Image 1 (cartoon, helix red, strand yellow):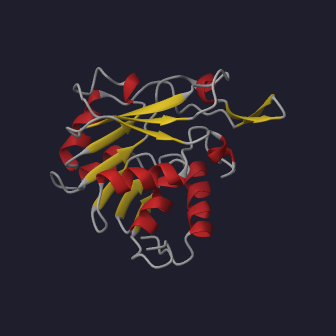
Image 2 (tube, rainbow, N blue to C red):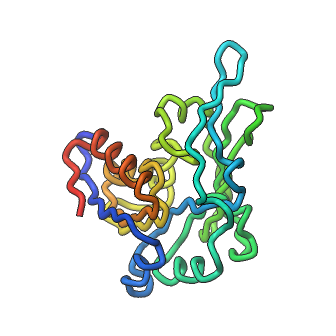
Amino acid sequence: MSDAESPKGTLELSCEDCMALMARYPDKHFDLAIVDPPYGLGQDGHAGSVRVSDGKQLRRVFEQKEWDKQIPPAEYFAELRRVSKNQIVWGGNYMTAHLPPSRCWVTWDKVQRDLCMADGESAWTSFDEPSRIWTRHRKILWDEKPIHPTQKPVKLYKWLLAKYAKPGQRILDTHLGSGSHAIACHYFGAHLTACEIDADYFAAATARIQRETAQTTFL
């Protein structure tokens, strides 16, 4: 079934602190949380994205903001586990102090090696399953014209949803970022509740989502 033929999901998006959002929901309200919180790398860790043209590295520079000084506190992870049945946490390798051991990690293998940025990105999951790798060249992200320094491809979220969710389920995203997750949920047929605390990123993400999902209604 194509994206045009499949049932569409609903998107409830808000510009607010994720702790305030989660506090409104009862235990295990969401079937799955897929989140991409700050990794605590500092501004310089996410200054831009890289593509390669004719053997040269080209760097896109984003506005530096005070959003990545530290990972979320323990209270965030406790609340995330309270409101969701399962979780996928990008950058979980930076957050092992707050996450239990897991045999199921997912990794985006970016194919191209030896650039100044990482060859891949990993996410911790709560699933008791084998680890999985999604292999796509990093240029798939550049082709999406990134609007956020830690943006991930829409196709990556579609892959995650296909493997770990079902249409009609309730999904949580505490850090909307570029909106890639919302676009994927719309076409997958999941019901996404998501927030973004930064007003500039929220405006850019919702504009992008509206462009790429013609009939979406925001609540």
